[in-house]
Image (cartoon, rainbow, N blue to C red; front, top):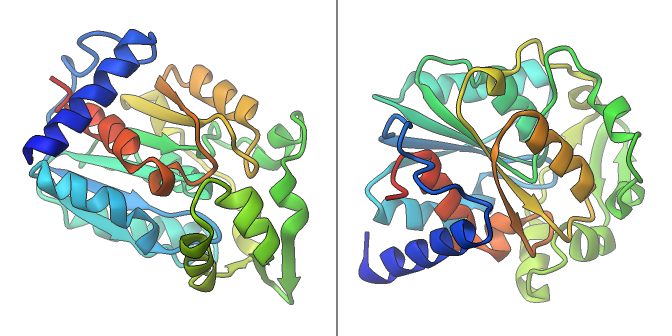
Length: 257
């Protein structure tokens, strides 16, 4: 880890402790991880983690970003499992947005030492996430989803304003250009397991999220007993605040002290 990265991480961690968001000694009882596996959600691909990946690599971790097929939940879980099978040693499994479904399902994998949810879905086993989400006000991005047959995507306006609202427009337009469409069948899937019931869990709430309701994020984080941070960020905090997201992942990897 470079000196600048160490300072950035220490500052982010100290801020979390000072605000009561990260308890002192939070990583003391964690298995120290060697690997991090990152999973992207809807309207994105594996490159959305690029600003986090470099920081984690500088910290000495082996990092893999899964290319989620966005077809069906079983397909997405299988893709993540194949990557987890290749890891040697304890692994932090990280999911953003929809991929919280994948983390929740495949996180029981024996290689997984802890879970990190970044503004992500975190259903219970067998829970209807869509029904849960409807108990909260509908976020603006929902109105921006359009379908071409069975393939869904966000309009450019919704992507720039509701998905990546705190990302510089030039960069957000590049991210929009590589948006991966998802299949309707993906949204019909339900988890059969809830890995957060048995694995140490961490959650980064995006306070300015317009894709998942922030209060829903808070509910899920509290329900799982996650060590939680709240970020002044849009839905894509791993892009707009990569240092804070990296700090939380390092905490989950047992590298917070």
